[in-house]
Image (cartoon, rainbow, N blue to C red; front, side, top):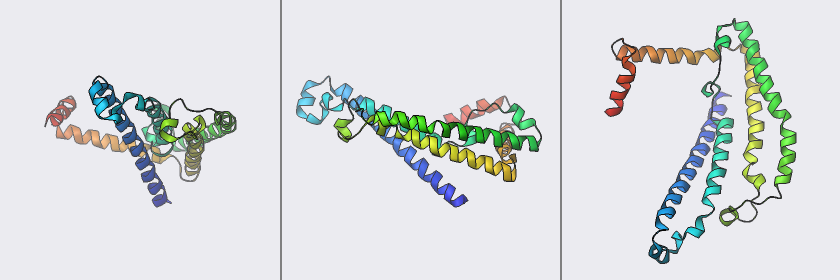
Length: 212
């Protein structure tokens, strides 16, 4: 099971990286066209630099950002990567922590799955709405439903992840959630040791490392 999870995670990271690369390349293209637009002779000499050909870039960047956010949260972002207020969670008994994990996982899974049907109804309407400019890039078949379809994927994958987390907590407890705190503590202790045992030197040491 773990090799399959790792493979899916690697594929998810690769797709997210490609989306980020496409967004960055489009952003660079926007800058290039913006500054070359002032040179009329250049647009005449190189027709591909005609600013009117690149009106789609803004909407394309927005669509890529939507995909990056929901794809990343579905396949890349780990539970420990989220900002959480877990003071109570980390200080209760293991049995209580187990039920916290089960209830939280089921609540998230049920809540997102419950929103799937009404969300899909809205998407059914979006199948009729065209994009403002992406038809120049992707063709006339693209609809707003296709742009936001990744949200439906998000509503399916995230409940599966949290359902799996609840089942794992039921079988094995939730003590695995505390391991990354131990890793952080060990890294902090190593950094203190490296800077001579003075925590206030950690920032200075990091700054020195950056300069080198």
